[in-house]
Length: 337
Length: 193
Image (spheres, rainbow over the protein chains, first blue to last red):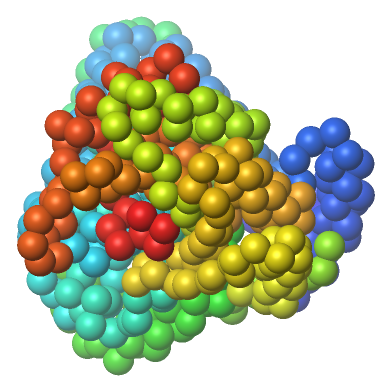
């Protein structure tokens, strides 16, 4: 897995130190290029993380290859497979289109007006003006778990939700960092990206589960690929695409951290908020959290307890990796020009 | 926001056009003749200070530069949202001089790589009946919009939308007015208004 993901470079996922060293090398080259550009263009402190971009492209390319291969296999099997693809596609489109309604209903979140939550709205107003993006709807969920998430099918139809737990636990500047992270998810269209990315897994999962039903009519087709092969391939595809989706999710989180930190200009406030939230999360009983498992992908910090979960399958990067990245941005912002 | 930007999880950096600020003196003339609003001679620039010493240095340099001309000193204040406002005071009749100062602040931040931290610039106007109006330049959009707090007792946060829309029509020929009304950010209690 590691070799595939590192795009030929020796960068194990989750190994903060090595990836940082590698990124520093790449960024130095990037800075030199940026310095040359500065002469004719506008100066910017934004450092491109080419390493992150390259790894993310790698994961997406792998997904595309897997996707095309699997589709070709299914289509070669004939009509019944096309039906499965259409059904799974319908699920994916529905999941994407209604993402905001589903997520907000699952969290029992209520929309708050500028009159009900003037500070929260004011903060978001400023951030969207800084980011030059449309303002999302603002929701608050009554729960003690300190967290926040963004959802919605496009930046024009998006919503940001914070829990009352996070409002109680972190201060205004930290909350601003968290909101900037969530707004970056909206600007990056992460709901759409993750829905497309997880489509293959859903499709393969459906075939795996409905294997017996669809396998029943295999003899009618004559020729073609035997169903057992499809079924076994589906299991493999489902597993691989699950892992790839999680890897992509972690990269998207790092991207949102970066954009959010540049938006507020205070990476350390986001780092502080992440530390607080993660610390609080570890103390919250597991039973409450399990019911929110499906929401994890869009939260700012995963609602899972402790570090026992295999980091390969985590939806979010480890805290140290996120803090490392934010520290680097902080150093860059403080560097005299 | 292009497809590639969405895929790569990044946002497009804006190409700001600070020269638009120099259209303000003409707009001030129009405001005087067509709507009866006089410039107050106060303007301000709003930005988000980043952490670290580099930004503080740049900010200090800007203040020193603007204070060197012997006029009223530049005032710095931080609002409830953590945004910094640099307030420049100038002779009310000399709108071009004020705009030049605002432009200098914007330019200095931009040149030191902190252009993305700029939120808006504001030029204050006042009607003889006491109504106040801010002409706001949105850095990220490169457009202007009017902000008019409704006159009235108490700290009620009401905008005089009728006046704002009237001003939009008045200025349409002089400035690029922001066409998306949802971007007309309310800046309550902005220094310089």
